[in-house]
Length: 231
Image (cartoon, rainbow, N blue to C red; front, top):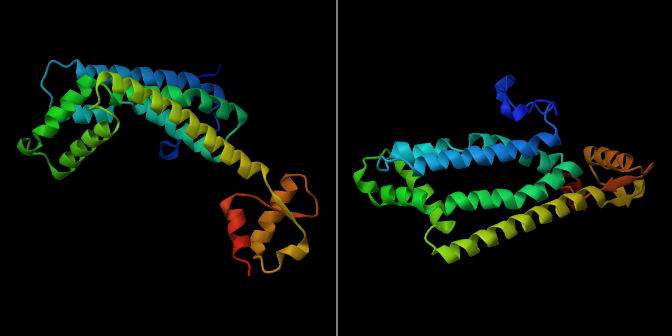
């Protein structure tokens, strides 16, 4: 396999992802390394012998997971706009794995203990407004994710989260496939009142689907809305 772009600096304009070099086979090892590095960063926070403070806990938490975020943002961009069967398969495979990874962090008792300690002392820490807001948001996110649950409840919470991640992914893929595959085929007489740009788009949609001399309306919003506005 060629070198993985996710493991290299991006010397592109504005450090944009080098989409021309990124291939489906790059994502699995990048996700795996990203999760591994993220857990290591979290463990360094929780194993610190120093008392929790804003820098060694909240700032460190903010800095953690950079590789995983880089990979996830590119992957989510592609699967929502230019997906392929290969990417869909990776999405189904990694949705529960990524959910389990997030649960492992959000339900980490040692990590939450440090955040909770800071949150309880927030009035004494002389934090800047943005720092206080960040601390409060992290605390709220952990609570909502189940940090206050007992051990058995945390296990169940993690199971539910993984299952929901899989169902959400399957639902999203089904919607995208329906948008791509379903079409309403129309003749010229059916397009009275439709703007020229919408006519051109409908003609192109028909052409790409092998329907010559016709027009096709798909479930894509840009295709449906002009037709719905016709009186």
